[in-house]
Length: 227
Image 1 (tube, rainbow, N blue to C red):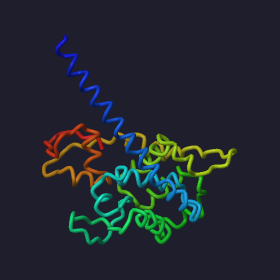
Image 2: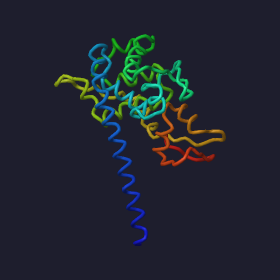
Image 3: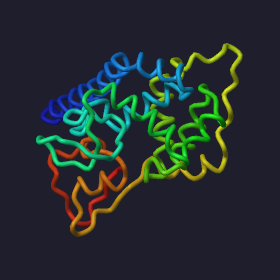
Image 4: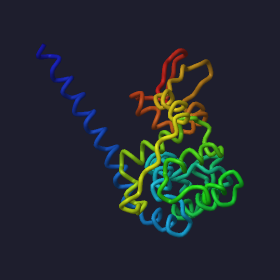
């Protein structure tokens, strides 16, 4: 029994360090970018919580390759001149430019324009599902992930809600359609790669590896992955 205790203790320490690192990364990201989100909310009416949560989700708190090499924090596709990575994602001169383009992306596309008139800057839940329904992401669990990030890190505190604001109840059909998909599982098929799976479900390779405690990119047919 004594021989087992030390490896278990080491695993526990590793788990705690990984959890602490993830939380620290999120906190640092929020502190570094919250002012941009608040400023955009005050100018255009998009909840600051939505702006931050989408950026955190799409860029893995600024740690994804697309975020590092292209300054792209919102997963928007387009042209880039990068010689460091080959990617279909849009490149920006700065992270701030990526934030500005996210707002412009919502304002200039027909499927998102109505959100500005339909929802207040306090209703992050409706914004999340409205953006998803407009086709921003392929995964049906995307909005649920965004809402979960907002609640976990209390990003709604940046939305400057009135003291008497009453948060709308979650729509039953939306909750029903996403509740079973938050912990989506995928079975690896012949020819699958982590990159292809991440692209299909609008997530990142690093996020999939972290969720499944993978040490390498190797996959085996029939392997079950948490997405």
